[in-house]
Length: 357
Image (cartoon, rainbow, N blue to C red; front, side, top):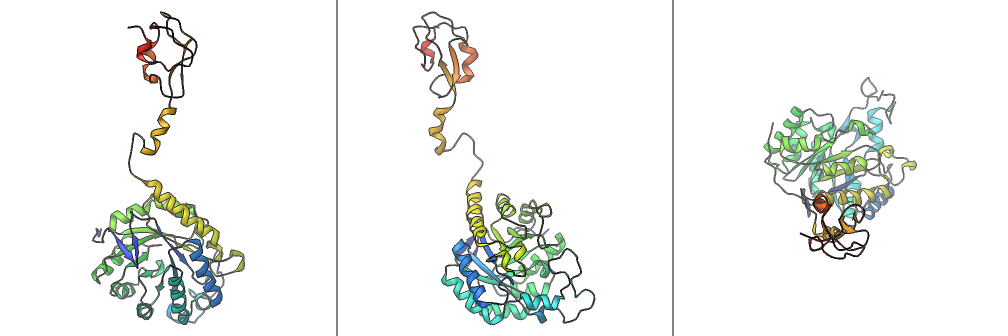
């Protein structure tokens, strides 16, 4: 297996991608703009307001994706598909983002403090995006086996994010080796389940650390499940990048609306993924500095009834309670049946000085 030559830290624009930073959240616009530039701009604005770190487009035309035919294989026949009955050509016409929008949407995203890039689906799209000075390229799962496309994108000297939906280990290895051979060492691999929507039971997040160890790359998740649960959980397994499809309103339509996050959900993803990352911390026992004050509320041995000098100590006049200013409970057996050295008032924290030696 190809072991790591990727650096410990990858920079996309001014953003550090690493385990040392909160996850990089990408809002994928896909075709949810429904061919309206105004809607696309509103999506960019909403993503920025939600706290996303980047927006991503998809750069293709129907002609660069498929053929304009309706022969078998070119029409979606799966009964459970969101796009059942559609020809690939017509679907991609509907879902594509016009090339002439790209510069405007990228500039708008940048003006709102976000990074902006895209997935190229053919080599011409790579050159087009490179001329727009995108900070990185994203290879979609279905294109992971398009080795010439990966070679072209990797040759541009920019970080490369690659989704791994459906891919075998050998296919991922070939993609990674191709990128590295073309001069790209800044590689991020995303665990992905290429069903739309995806079910949590098929998400297999435990693959994430294996991807990192097998290929020596930064890792993340391209998530098509509903909600944010799977995405937040991925952080605990090492995801430093999370990509989710985004829509203004699932009820308003959009080719990917059914498995896309609305603005409030995207806000929650940004907040909760960072919270999950902060909670990872390190392996630590003995309590943190923040817990020091809480130690006084542990249990200890206290006098529960007034005790006369020489009186035997036992359950009738001692009790293990909070707070922790008396002898620790581990000493309980040692003090039972001992004699009181002097009068001890109820509510006194028991100490060795109270016990006749």
